[in-house]
Amino acid sequence: IFNKSNGASVNFDGSVTNTVGIQTINNNGLFVGQWNSKGAKMLFCEMAILQDEISETDRVNLENYFAIKYGIKKNIEVINSGVNGNNTQDIINRLPQINQHNAQYAFVQCLVNNFRHPDISKRRTPAQSKIELTAIVESLKANGTTPIIVSMLPIEPTESDYVCAMFNEPSGCDVEALGNLYRNVMMEVCAEQNIDYLDAYSKFLGVNQPRYAYDSFMENVFNSGSADGVHLRPLGAKFEAGLLFAYINEKQLNATKYIYVGDSTVFCDGLTLEQKTSTILQNHLNL
Image 1 (cartoon, one colour):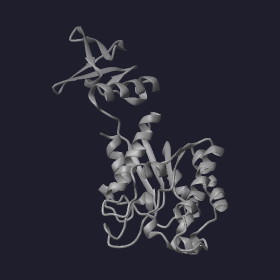
Image 2 (cartoon, one colour):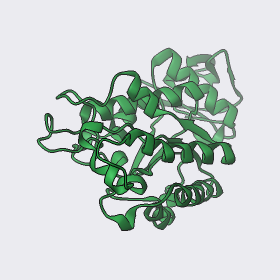
Image 3 (cartoon, rainbow, N blue to C red):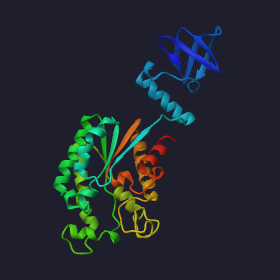
Image 4 (tube, one colour):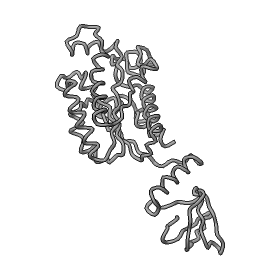
């Protein structure tokens, strides 16, 4: 253990030698003076370094060195804060608990219940949704968490005709066009709040998902025995986790704690813990 003020403890096959004097870090190695009357240089992978004894810059450099040369990554936590049936007001009500996690980044995916919940009391107009989504984003930002809004996913139209009646539209109406009213709200909030919008909607459509077949990314009569068209199946959760992972890598977020906030899409209703998006994402990040 390297300690700038109190020397170092060097472990060789279980035998610990305490040293004193000046230690220096350079060229991805640690030089320890006066070990058995000689200097010894060890790679960082052979040392455990106290985080509170080195600068933030040195800590980041060490983590990057471990990751690149040895594939060793820091422990990363992904918290699933999805609740079945939640609309934006429900999420606002849960913000004290959500903010208590003090995550560095929050993926926020909601509005599907604002848009098409069977209980009319849960639904919100696009204008109401914008006000409440803005309140969620502002609360997260005030808590020191950076929000990233993830778009509402596509809906399997074959099993979503009942949505038309919610909007006083005839059977066979364009369900996705109605959904886009809410996706537009998400993009507007991102632009006004200067935060990122992750367009998962287009990514799903890009691989022809969801489809009315057994291998659909969403539940349907073929893969779950009941009409649904919106909840993720294991393949869909895995695909979405890959999108979040790609975003984190592209943006080089380098965080230790993420929270995934939303409704049953986030919770992954009907899936086991191992199949949930947040679990798959955490496994990706800790590979």
